[in-house]
Length: 168
Image 1 (cartoon, rainbow, N blue to C red):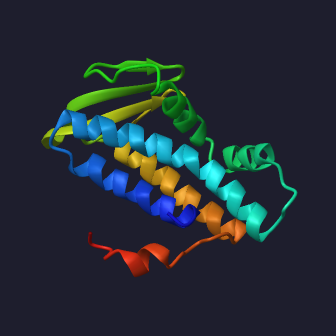
Image 2: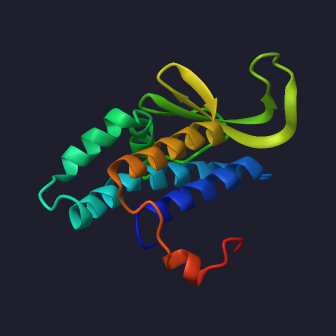
């Protein structure tokens, strides 16, 4: 992957996997991979800023700026770093202030009616909020896209477009 925008495309791919998963393991792995991918954007953005904008900026400054713009990255950090130390089970898994829970039904938040049966959609609990994992990471992906545009770094690379068919 050539830069942050390629990693953002990977995050969007993980979101698609979470949404379409028909097996619990696929949904759980895609959720953890989405957290790791989102948190990895801090390193990639720092690298891109150093290469294109400011050679002297510290990684910690980029991290702090990104956490200020995208507070939910903190949950990604917790899930990504803790994923080395726990096994995802199909019951709530507490990770500091974050919990990943596997649900077999997706409910409409307004009516509590079942929207989709047998979707193994993980629920992310973070800071007293519960949100389906695909929605949680979609919000992060949109915020990361806005961050890349704001910083004018590597918003679009052609490397993957030249090598891969976008539908692959």
